[in-house]
Length: 390
Image (tube, rainbow, N blue to C red; front, side):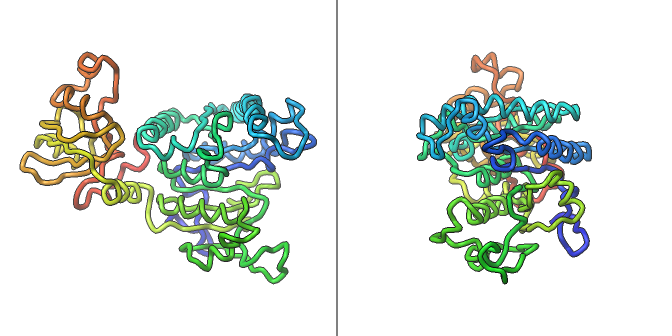
């Protein structure tokens, strides 16, 4: 739980790593195209948070909306191939406008296009996570979108609310902001029920909260508030708070900071503890690494596991799988996501990291398990100081 402002609500300026989701309707007008003034105002807000030390990631829709304008596709519903062609054209334009807007504040933008498998398959997940961490280390702002040029109905997220929450979990963000055309959650649809009451804070998502969003069979659940509740489940389970705020006016983040009405969803944990709990208690181990006493001591001091400390490799596992880490006495020291397939781990076990390329024929990661991918036994899940390390 972050430092609270008056009234007990969190403060947006109190978070260290923030995902900001921008929808197509906020960014692009069907008739006039890009809302340039709105984007410039948002970029100013983002630059303020960035200058304050926060890591910022943007999940931005708008590629198809921009691309269909360039291609002259005016009909309301596009065929799959038309939507993918529009996305191919629009992604270039979308990346350019974000890069230009952020460059005015001396911020480098990076484009990341994801498909569903990039956050759900651990091998690809680790690659994407490492790329995001490196960009943030260099103070760039990743601008992320679903790769609509190749995604089909069977392999897509379907909405950028849930994509933002998934990216938040992958990047160990502690806050996810959904900019919307509504200022938060109400007890009923305010357009239909004048007695609907606004809810400023949701400590926990219950069946009652889900019912307020429309429920699974409700008309409101089709791409509306229900998808935001689903995103909130993902975000809060991953240790991040989530915020729904009105993004229709200029400077929406500044408005939130200054006390504009919005709905906060709170998380019972932090990104670190949530991730450690996921590694330690959810994933089925596929193998075992036995390590020497020096490696045990280094890990307990917050270090990564290097190949030099590995005495024995057992099991058949692939990169990204969970493995058990044991000391020479056989006791379990930790569990973690391994950075090498078993066949490669056997070859580099006991070797210095500088020898990896000579042994394997390619330059892999210097750690066999990175400290961010380790959950130590006992009190290791609550070790301080590793949240935003890469």
